[in-house]
Amino acid sequence: MSFILQMENKISLSMKTSEKNICQSCGMPMKNMTDFGTDRDGSINTEYCHHCFEEGEFTDKGISLEEKMARNIKIAEKLGMSKATASKLARNTLPKLRRWRKSHKTKHVEE
Ligand SMILES: [Zn+2]
Image 1 (tube, protein in one colour):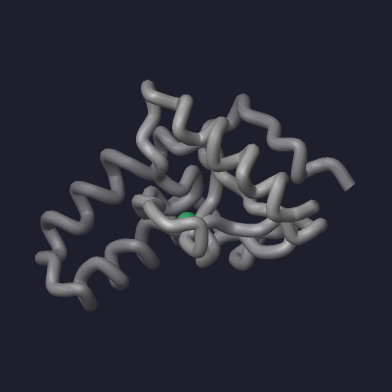
Image 2 (tube, protein in one colour; image 1 turned 135 degrees about the horizontal axis):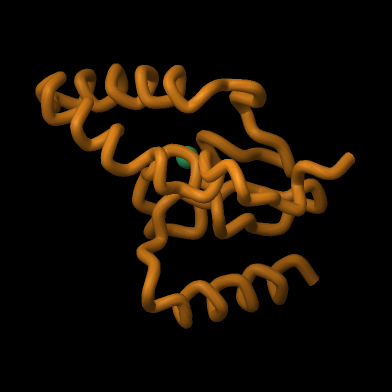
């Protein structure tokens, strides 16, 4: 059952041509099924990566955009990116992502 769900997600993903498969929370590119987050029922969530989203919840719930950018910059620096580049990248990418767009309501918010 969940395998079929995953296949369906994969198919709908590959049809999204206008958008790259990047996490809508941190901007990480997602290439493998294991990169994706999971919904509460264990199915794959194609919007967010597994670092940000697990079992239907953000792993860093309540974090602000500024904090998330700071965190991303630190991670990128650890991976060898210069602080200037990392900071530019975070500022160009994160505010455009779905999680940080004020008007966007995700189905995960309701409780
Ligand atoms: Zn993420």
